[in-house]
Length: 398
Ligand SMILES: *Cc1c(COP(=O)(O)O)cnc(C)c1O
Image (cartoon, rainbow, N blue to C red; front, side, top):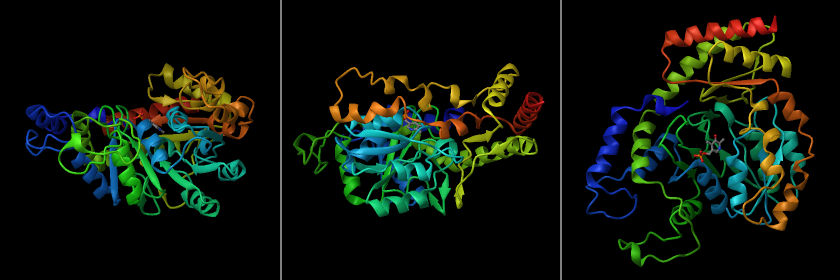
């Protein structure tokens, strides 16, 4: 997945364009910038590649999710349904708007479980936010149908699955809004950065203004711009966008490599009795950023990950024992350890998190191992790794 592995001449050239003019900001300074608009160019490239009308680059993936929610009018008093298995950014982004994250189980897709989503809907529910974890997607057709029935927003977190598709459409373009991260470890990196995409022109305008203090971006005198509504600063810098522009142009090459390396690993472990793979919803094509597989039980998964570590197989994760990506270790959220007071609404909403039964998620995450697919491997290295992984698994299963 990490695009940084293939940082090279193309990225350096784009950055140098920016350094040559010295215009590090994405807006204004038209005369000084010598025709270079890196953030704007990357937005156009995203629109074209994903066949979507609008793209807004911002400072991070977390900011992208917050902005998507804000643009769609989600805030205090609203509930947003999100999965137990995701990066901590998901609840951070929801809580930033004042809304309450409602954490629900995942299934063998490693994304939102449809029955659990239905059971979690209340009169306060405003949005459902599937997170397409580790390169594959939620059952978007089922979620869209729930959203239509209950008049809810569908906001896709595609931060870990850029380039994946569902029924022929790019992930991120199926919901009302879609979000990407371009942080340092994502498939396409800006160093730090994020993006929101949408086909809704009103949301696009809100994203454009909101990410830049609510400035209305009318005319050529920034100081004279007015503020139709309150905003914030979630701008991306032109230097970061320059890196991302070069990286994004390489997306298809990156996806080809991911698929090639993923297939080599999968092929090697597929025949092993006791290894099964995550379910990819019908019509879905993974981005192949990770290879995810299940073992028979928690102890076997723990044994396999230990064996991987002992044999130098890095970048594989047993998320059950991981502090960042699974509800089990989100103590700071369950204990509501905020530096500043949270609203009573939000506190009430988080109250039941501590004792809520997530055994359904435990059943899948406890048995799951996620292996990052690297871009920098040679084919030979991928084969060696695949063989070593297969041996570790076989020896552990016994
Ligand atoms: C990386 C990531 C984010 C946040 O992105 P940042 O750019 O690091 O803020 C959000 N959601 C998921 C699923 C991620 O993996």
